[in-house]
Length: 92
Length: 484
Image (cartoon, rainbow over the protein chains, first blue to last red):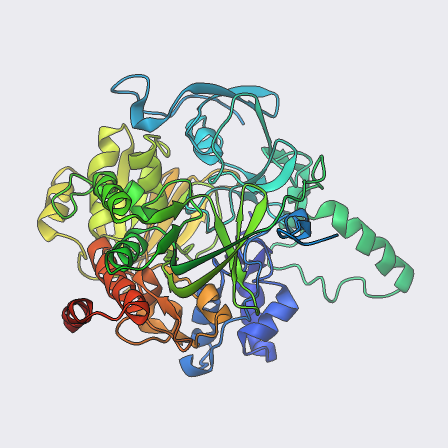
């Protein structure tokens, strides 16, 4: 039976993968995000970042060095059509 | 889906738990009994459907964790729209719900083979990068084999974008947000309270305990609603804040349309996210957050399963341990890594007296089951015999992670703060962040009981209103609030 500890539920990233990457030198959340895509799924890091920070602390990285990913809008998925609407008085 | 049976509690009559009119959902060839006010995720759980979808790479079953719009594990296709948070959409007669990212369907997905083929990890960065034609072929195949849903049936319309200005905007309508809006309005500010949920109250909608003289969370919320109405606070529900844009407005998405909101002061009260526990198979459907189970049980009157193990021994955990047996759910035990009970010890003793074991100094080692949760293995921290607790529900407590995204977008200084349980914006006593027009409050400052969160909200609301309407009485009240 597969026994995975899932850190990122959106992108299916396991704790084993994260630990291996930290050992390979990806010692910050931004690098881990770029490699594993965690934090880029539907939840935008709500379910993974703190557990990720715990794994980094476990690997001996000081808390002061742990920074979150850069958060940008839109924070929840939105149909592109919503952005295509016009403001009042705006012409096409 | 092997069996369909109704897991709802019916005790008073037709409109128990404010479920509303009975409706029928069309779900993968079945017609499910549902109610008009019930979120789709609740209706699915009430019909014994736990797997909402399959995961992106390994096609592991995914199901509700938080029931509060934050875990994105309840995604399904609703009326031709992919990846809908089913905990946020109410049922409608004839609504079609389909689970995605699976072949042939999420109950039995042959693509789960990936999970077995790659038992440890799937290092797709290094797989088949050469030769180029093979790589090209696999790149195409990957889109077919990975999840993420299919395109919508129809293009969405593009309604007009609305703009709105207000003095104080409070984003998030839990206990802190409601308190902030109330005090800001009472201090003379034109106030708007926005929440993405269909009802105000945040986690308190599922709070089963007496609160500030009221019978439970919902009763307390009712009193706040009356006060908000009286204070003239404008309330917008079902509006999700997408973020803060460079131009200085907050964008909200509601009913297919955008609203750009420009407040003079903003109080962020977006709470904290229930976190999944970390152990092998921690993602099995049936593993909920404790607040998620409490909402399912107390707000919606749905049995989460037949046998429940509770991780954590705080007051909410103890309350669940008392209430679940009344609903016909066996409590297998409570377990915590701590050496002491965090909640009321007398209450814990009574629960023990009913034959429910409380495991102190135990950690959750792994969950058992492939499609459904079958049990949880508990290991004593200081060695000794592990315990296998057979269960089909786990209520996982543990500190929630503060939300921080909107504060960061507005220019707040976000740091990792272990004491607050995660990332959080730095702020002064009133909650004012590095951007002096923006406040953070409630559980964004770390987990707190509802009344503590409300007290934080009051301070932020007063400070925000005071910026715009200087007043000595309000200033004195703010000093009193922040002194304690």
